[in-house]
Length: 474
Ligand code: URP
Ligand code: ZN
Ligand code: ZN
Image 1 (cartoon, helix red, strand yellow):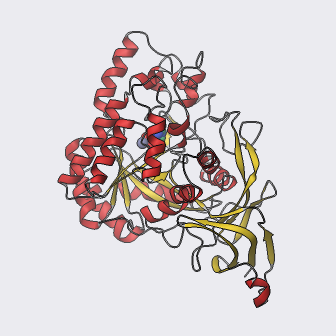
Image 2 (cartoon, rainbow, N blue to C red):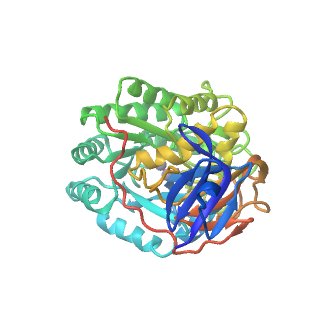
């Protein structure tokens, strides 16, 4: 068993920062030593990583990825191998991907198919949520089974995408009631898909076919409305844990904040694209280039009546937004995004960010939007707590998995297709971004998987993580 000592760094947790040397014994964190204790106690290690002037943080956890997702007539372009390798490059040591039950399909089979895709292929650890694309007696029974036996304790439903994953309010209520019985969490894609489809058809009828109309036909009010409706349904079902995914809009955040002020089990995440990007800089680029940024909910306009970016940063500070995930769902421009040339509604929805979440959010620390501790909390610790992986994951403490990132705040990272780019996409949604801070060394369950700008891990190292229930329920 290899003993690895990370020496001389500053360990950051949600509750503070302190100088500690961290000993990882085999796959597990063994001890945190105050400065001088290692020498005084004669502690030995097989290898020592010098973290002087660097931060030592828990491995990042991205709780929203879609490797190989069949969507929009094609498949998300990252496999579990390429996507988890890119995750490692970005300081992410655990992903939670979404197994899929297609409408008309079977939940247990869907989960089995996802295990087959991932097993033996992942460079870092992985877990699953389950998409329920058809609420009926069989899928409700399967929700119970997955929660109690399979370590899959969260279920995503869609108020968007009619005809694909969409559930109506009655189906949502039934799934929430079942989740409530077993303590599982309902994750909601909260956009009013029925109304959106009307707006989409009307826009296409007017000849508005460019990528930018993807955003104007999915107005933020319809995200706010759906979020509010989901919150009401969860209340009617009995304060069932509800987690709003990829929240992009001020109106949706206001609905979450109101529910949380009432003490409800309502939580939400946002993603870097909703904190940084505007329609004007992305979807509205000339020609078809904007297709690269088609995702749902859409990127919002800088000229919207609500200051979405500012509100979302505030939400991160107040904990109305608990987590930053990526909704990593990459599609190449060539042959994939191009499916929607001449009709924006046929552009596969999704962007690739799994490699850059830690880097992009660290900019929030640099610019003073969030503290260092909050960065760690929203990207590492809360994801573990919210989705039943704590204290195995998400914290540097004795007994936890040896998932650690050494972060260099004195360096910069250049993001782009010819710079840092390891995701299997032919473009970068973050092309040209130069950010402060750099992933220096990444350790996954005691194994160094990235160091010296080199991937030293291997496919198959990553293990399935059976999850428990959320730690946040009241
Ligand atoms: O555009 C997105 N978000 N694609 C992935 C599927 C989803 O809704 O999360
Ligand atoms: Zn979604
Ligand atoms: Zn998603």
